[in-house]
Length: 470
Image 1 (tube, rainbow, N blue to C red):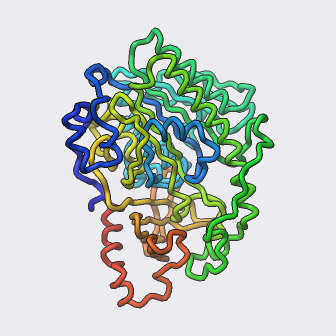
Image 2 (cartoon, rainbow, N blue to C red):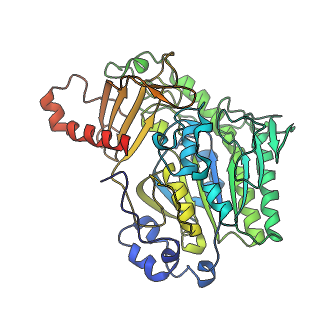
């Protein structure tokens, strides 16, 4: 199936109507089962508030630290079982969240290139132009100058990344604020929501704590919280990596390293869970819980010494798989369902704009999750910045539920995101995810042309090439 699926005809207005929801039922089980009579005429007449929560470097397997989140968005929303970051790196991923575009289209190919994002394509621009009150609370884009105000936000507390006593841009004034940054983000968000008691405009709040990014500093109250023991998975650390690229062959992270990192991440995320719960209580007190579209995800995942790698930026599942939840009770999306479609951060902006009844004037690579559109695979991509270092080369990957094909390239980017290099394919990987979910056996290692043909590699390579230029 194309990376640009047919735009669903079931948009906000149709989705809120019972007949359209019923029509969607067969095609989109996860969302359609939640839709129906709960969608009221009053809800359809009112644009929803929008709460978008994006954490930092949060792997998928971190639900122990977020029980209140799971109770809310899992129990009263939709949990997407196949959520991904289309580029597992902070600034490119966040630019995809804002624009609904892959990094090769929005131009922010690395963390240094944040100013390459066309701000006219962002969801906050569309919402502000449509009369929404817009707020940003937390991290924005890597390499963004703290003194530069974030475009198209009416109110903001922009964090210079850190956990304690950090520097902020508060509505245009750069200052240091004492305290734990996740708690400051929570309190600033609550104050923004309080204004809804007198300001009748719908609102958009982009809430983005620094957790669980390194150094994963927990709040003092959680510094010694016991964390369940973790015994790893078959890919940790994977002793035989002879079929992997050189940077993985040389990777040295151990299970002990992974356990220490996991413990820090989980402890840091406990404060995020507290913040989410406080926001939920505030929305309930304001009477705005039902008609608020809530989306929760992370900018990328993180490996816990999988294949010896203790970072992100790689084409292995823990790096690009992320938690992904959605709730909107007024539209029938509050029943605690699961959706098995392949979804990604490029789908967030189209979903928000669909819910708000806004048609974007720029092209988008994602699609609204409120309709029935689905994909059979996802393009996941990453660019190397500069020519030095021992990490991965630029790569692109065809990711389906049952298989993954990856190519590494002789390409690199500069600080603006511009690409240089021959583009020659330097290494390839193919994994049968149905039988090898931990990506232990690269079936292209030593494969003959006949074996590659049997695996369908020529067709996958052609599909990947098309995705990279679309």
